[in-house]
Image 1 (cartoon, one colour):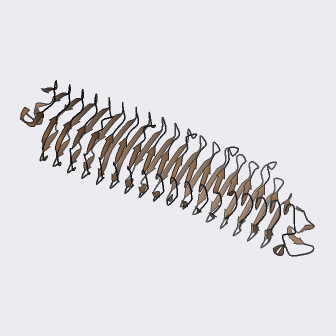
Image 2 (cartoon, rainbow, N blue to C red):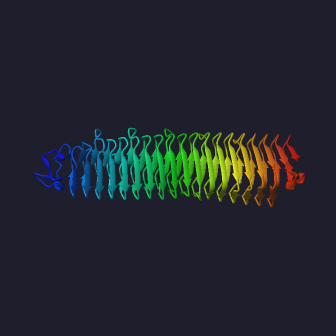
Length: 483
């Protein structure tokens, strides 16, 4: 049997009111609504205008809700209390709206919550709040709209498991999904988090695991998806997913030691970067025809705060961005490209502003960019660049531009042709450039190579066909070796 407050009886696992139908309650009713201590099924009932919770589970029991409404209560629409272990909730076609705290709040532990066609909207806190431990959530075809957060896991929410399918978190006042807790696991399939005032998904906690496919994180006021500076050790894998038209970045990593894998994603039309890294020691893999295009700033940006990250890009593209296709401003990062295209960006195809980065480019294209194909900016020092079997062509200025100092560049099997100015321009000092087997320069508007800096060294393999006549040396103390 279930127990109820405020002169309400429970008979045959159905709630009946001695004085009035529960669907016609008034603002005069105070205290908590239904408090459940035994297995209970409710069908087409309404719990509204209670000062506390509309429905509360006080013990590890099974609860079934069918077309139930719990709205306009002073606290939660539905709560599993903190003392509860092993409860079960199955809610179908039910709504938890306009409550003073959460629509649904799970404080207990080891409980199972199944939601199908559930609405949790216009609540003062979360549509769904999870403060407890080791709970399991199966959420299907449900909506979390215009709450503070659509789904929020405070720091006390640890070890929970979420399977979210075909569900939407939208137009919330803060984030669509906000994860402060640790060690939670998410599986997302056809989920969306859109139109939220802040981020589509924000991870502030650590050691969480998010796996998603066919999902959409777009039109949010902040980032589409990302983690905050406090986040560490999270594992994020997203496939066939979109980050579009967000007010900040499509994807943003501010934390440390996170592992991110993006397969066949699109990050387009964001007000800043398609992908930004501000954090340290993160591992990022982007692959399988992922595209970062039409963003107002860079397609991909390692911010000046981004250090010691490892980034691998395979079979993907950075195109038509308002600044650079790919920009590394931070220090001591390792970037590897294989079968990547960067084209039609307003500035550089690939720019390095930071120091001591190691960059390897294989079988890739840098083409039709508004400035140079590849550039070391004035601030880019002591970097190491290797380009193998790639093509750099039809860029508005130089194929490769080296303005910084102390950089090491190796070119092997690389074609540099039909650029608007020089094939290579070296305006910086103390750089070392090796031009190896199979590297060619043809049809560049100003010529093959110009050196205006000081103390640079070129080692040029004779089989490339370059001669001294192909090099304009207007600097001083530069060394050109044909080997």
